[in-house]
Length: 128
Image (cartoon, rainbow, N blue to C red):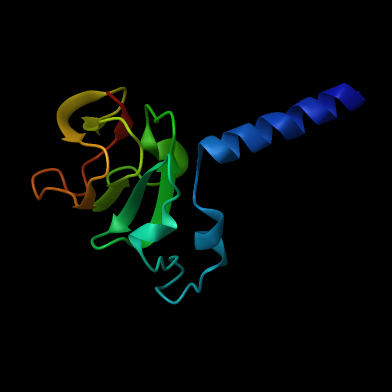
């Protein structure tokens, strides 16, 4: 039974590290009606693809290293308005789950607001 508890704890840590709101974001003030305020693009750690709920890196933040087939799983589906690609790979953002629909390619080092034609429409992300 002890090995099972340890395994579950390790699995939980891996899941949190792969796709979760940043720890610094959770500690920030929730002055936006329960949302989390992010101060700057620099809150996105090197090696991560970060997304924000609002333009100019405002609102809730989620970060990825391997992507997500369905952003509903992390609570930010169809809500992404700004991104920062702090990886050395191009990332693709898709308007549908399972890497389908319209695709937007985000080159390494790019940061800014999502193009207006897919703003609040991104449903899956991954390195491409």
